Image (cartoon, rainbow, N blue to C red; front, top):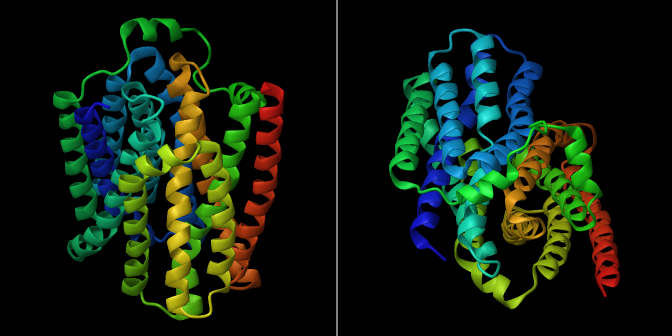
Amino acid sequence: MKNKPLFAIFLIIFINMLGFGLILPLLPYYAEGFGASDTVIGLLVAVYAAGQFFGAPILGQLSDQYGRRPILLISILGTLIGFVILGFANTLWLLFLSRIIDGLTGGNISVARAYISDVTTDEDRAKGLGVIGAGFGLGFIIGPATGGILSQWGFALPAFVAAGLTLLNLVLVFLWLQESLPVEERKKTTSKKPLFSFNALGAALKRPYVGTLLVTRFIFGISFSIFESIFSLYALRKFNLSAEQTGLVLTYVGVLTVIVQGSLMGRITKRFSEKGLIISSIAIMAIALVGWGLAPTLPILLIVLAPIAYAGGVLTTVIPSTLSKSVEDKNVGEILGVSASTESLTRVIAPSLGGVLLGKLSTAAPGVFSGILLVLLLIYVWVRFRKLETDQA
């Protein structure tokens, strides 16, 4: 495994998520200043995820055709433009424009994963992808707290700081990151097929192993995104936690996830098969999410959050790793882009679904619903993996 490229990708993802985390918690307050309703604020969050849904597979496919480095540069430049527009925004439509631009170009995690796939062996793939998870988690831990501090001097300041960090990211990629995809491999993938096609998504789903993994990513994503998007409101309603207390709890989850992805993935994947890790992690997550919903006290909640962090860290690393090995090298960027696209779609659906479950039913409903959904997924994955093994025998 080449350590320098991995460290470079870690820095890229860390700075990327640090900038994103700086402005994410402040967007509702920023939009409220322009008279936005709760519905409009929800749309502001959703358009970013919708942009990633369309943008991620396009970036992934372009990286297969033209190389990882130039597409990373273009995508980071788009994020920079989005943050600058956000900082100067004086109307609501400019806020939307900034999030749409950032969403369309911000799906570069699929390109970063493809880069990792290029520079790692099959045995080290999951460990390498864990580096992305660690950078992702660390940036998201530090970003929101820093953004909250900077917001004392206005909501535009965090946006400009995020823009500055993104500019640093752009310079790092330009000066430091070398191309990982050989020219001869890029030539193989150049074609006239459309950059985004629902038919292409459908074709990927029809492939037995790839389709199973994409369905797994989507259903797991719905359950985990419900947890992520609704947790703050859940903590307020059930335990009357303040924003600062909720932030500390989420930091605890983030630190655990970083430990799993940054330190444990190499050992775990050497000891257990990736299929076994997917099945066991779905089972652990199902039980833990039900425990989250039913947790009677804060200390018990903190205990339950540990297996959620573990299972989430494993699944978000192992699924892309397994996907990257299930297609030809020339199509790695494209299939990881499709995976990132399905992940983005869950972030469009989950917040509204979680809000309805919490608001209309009870504080336990989001966790119990998510757990039941994962039990159904567990049955599906178990049956599909058994069938695939039988067909290959």
